[in-house]
Length: 114
Image (cartoon, rainbow, N blue to C red; front, side):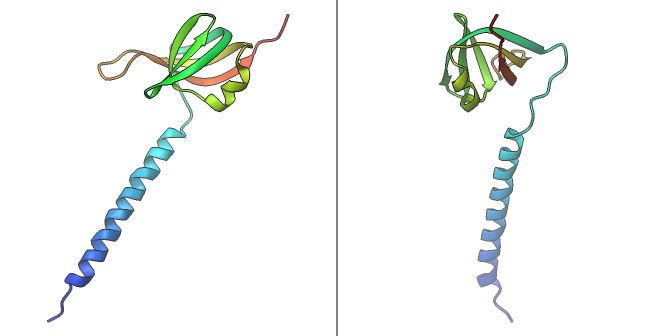
């Protein structure tokens, strides 16, 4: 009769580690997906970018004395555009029972100086 209990513990540990790695991979993959939305939800916000701050998992972005709440936001790209007149293409996500109404940034560019 063989004693398989010594092998069972490392196999269970390896399976648990593999499942954890797969879950982490799925979260990273889902976070890197391109923002998509229907034409009825696509919005362009324009104004001078005065700054942004992170509050919880959302970003408060100030354009021309108006603050907008963003979920998907590229702070590294946007920090160079502070004080410029910009156009932000984004998707408006409506208020639901478990999420606050917010915008997801698609792209942003500096408006031409006239």
